Image (cartoon, rainbow, N blue to C red; front, side, top):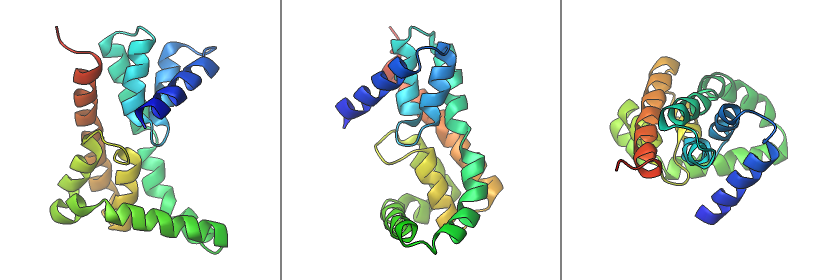
Length: 164
C-alpha cells in the first residue's frame, strides 16, 4: 500500500508541477485516502521547510471537513434512490461502522483518535463519515476532527521531518 500511495503522490506532483509547491501540498492533503499523510511527505519531496509543509498540509486536510459534514447526508439521501449509489453507501456504511469501535466507546474523543492515528482508512474523511453515521453534532465533530488532524500532523511531521 505504501508503494501505491507513493506512486500516486509522485504522479500527482508530476501532473501538478505547473502549480506552486504550496498549492500542490494543499491539493494532495485534501484528497481522500492520501490526506495529510501524503501531503507532508510531498512537502519534504518538494524541499519545503517543515513549517510550510505543515501549514499547507493541515490547511488542505481541513478544507473538506465542513462540506462533508454539512452536505453528505442531504446528498446521500437524494442519491441513495439510485442502485449504484445505494450499493456504495451500504459498503461505506459497513466499512465505517466496522472501524468505529473507538468512536462508540469514546464519543467525540474517539473522533480525535480516529483522525489522529495515521493508519490506512483512518483520517478526516473517515472520521467525518463516522460522525455523520453516529449523529455527532456539527460543531463537536468539526472541532474533534480538526484537533485530530493537528495531532496527525505532529505525528507525521516527526516521521517525515525527523529531529536531528
